[in-house]
Image 1 (cartoon, rainbow, N blue to C red):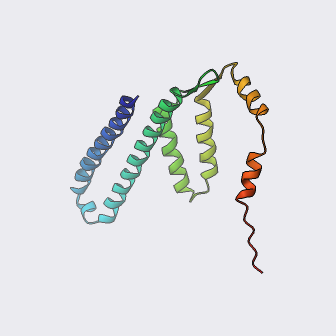
Image 2: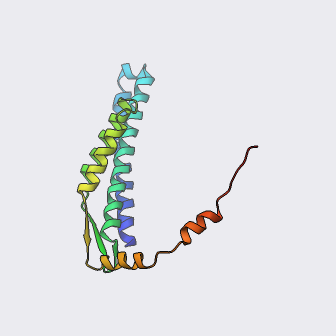
Image 3: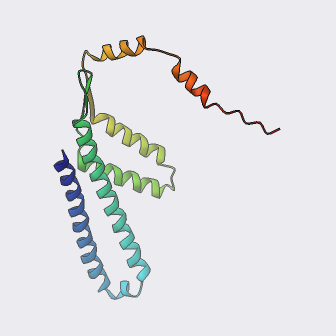
Length: 162
């Protein structure tokens, strides 16, 4: 189990190293052009765009890999089993395009991006419910008590301003 987390961390780490090398080479090539050397703001903007690209790639990779690992190893004995088949590359593209749309629309595309993400995550998730799930519900219904209501009353504080 732990080795899978290290694989995910190393994959993200080496992606950061690779993208950083590409950024460095690109910066050196663009820095040698006389026009860009006289316009450091443009070069700074290019570096910011590359960093935006790197952060979205690494965040998407890590989130997809961790989600798959957690869901594929999660189960309730005799109740349910979970499975995630989220493709890392597809999720990275989704995270990048969502972030780009949100930035370009000044935040107005946030609901659209959340719906796209939820749709992709739902399509990649499977829950296998075993017959033992009905017993869990029956046990819960049999053991109803007023403890939660009484506990809420214990912490109920009346504040009066007059």
